Length: 360
Image (cartoon, rainbow, N blue to C red):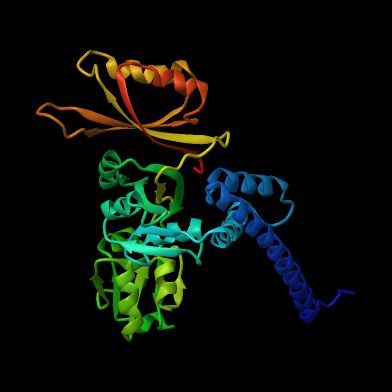
């Protein structure tokens, strides 16, 4: 005879587990608070991305249940963020507006409790970090379908700022509206590029009688849709949450493979090696007029068994000639002996941007 499942009994068990989780989390936060006092006296860094990555990797390998790495990461990144706020609350600047994907990337690493400052330009984020008005900044560096963000590269050349960590994030759009019945929607607000990236969804669900209205940001789209009847927004889920706009459909983008990589930046910040790192540098060749000078520099990575993952050139903007900085990314840490060998080349000028745990 089939046993009848009693939902109330199961809910009671869940409630009991929740209480145990809360007790353990409070115990964890007490330890965090003690560590925070120690760090404060030694001026040690509160944010340790290599430590957080090691914890997530360890828990993922130990997990025997239903939680995969993505779920474990989502849960524990929020726990880490709450922990950092208990140790020492720190201000974080990001490329705005509020509700943007950069804002979403910031919350992914620093949690919902973080103190955030929305700034209008990438330059202003760097300026806030450089003057130490904020401890960290979040800016986009590249999209896997549209390439590098040139504004970020240009500003990286100007400031003595370190890359602390990277945040690879899928760009996923939500369809949000106060109207439960999609047939009653007469206007849809969003950024022009969002309409293009969600073209299949728009074509399948709406005819030409529905007005598609481009605005300057998906955050603005959410704000307008929240205040206007029979309207909707194509936006990030964080923008929908900000304006209390119910999400009717999630992940409506045409491509599931649309990712943007964001950087966390700070001043006078150096990560210790995690054992699985990425390094970003800017390199200028003093012998760039000699045939094969660039090829010789790149060959040194192969000779030292270092995986070179990216190289792009950018104008150095100096003198009348044509000089270039090369943005170079490779696997490894700046303190690795093989990396030190390459950087001893007398024909290169190197600006170290940062070594940080590899998340993608």
